[in-house]
Image (tube, rainbow, N blue to C red):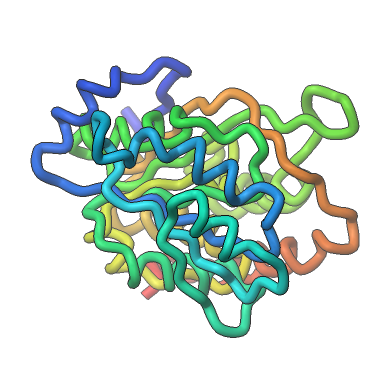
Length: 259
């Protein structure tokens, strides 16, 4: 039987079961954020019950990487209870994720986007569940429906027009991954530290391909996060994302992990 990406349904273990499954490990949540003053505070606040020392603590750290913001992103994140670090330059998602990995301390690292308007605690609990309870899991991706212009689906244009066709043609073993560019990603620190993050918005595709080649397809899991609501960017802003995805794919055509 061939290897497959494992898919986990909407339900997740209880919070108590997850805390018990940590078994001494720690969890960091990192949010790369550039000019997200409107949403970053509510995102952090939505996650804070998992971090509150007075409660049942699943998350040990919430870190926002201020990726060269020109607005009040850092202040709003700090006011909501996150630790904030500043990434010089800005505009490079991969660099912000690398900075978050280096600055955080958790054995499990969860990356979330800071512009998602309906973030809930379940984004974290569902992402970490396979890592805590399935020993073979190395990387977990979220999948979801993405509404656009009042329609229940249709968002994720770079995913549908670039990432998924590229995967089907060049990396068909990963075709089961429903949202290959999802910013909702979690992994073991020891694995992330072995990998080189592709530049810019190619980072998510690069991680998928590199993890599959280094650790095997079955080390990747995907979990249902329901519906993801965020602002949909105009078409001219999507070209750089598409270019980064293609660059990451072409860099991996030799069949070896990077590095």
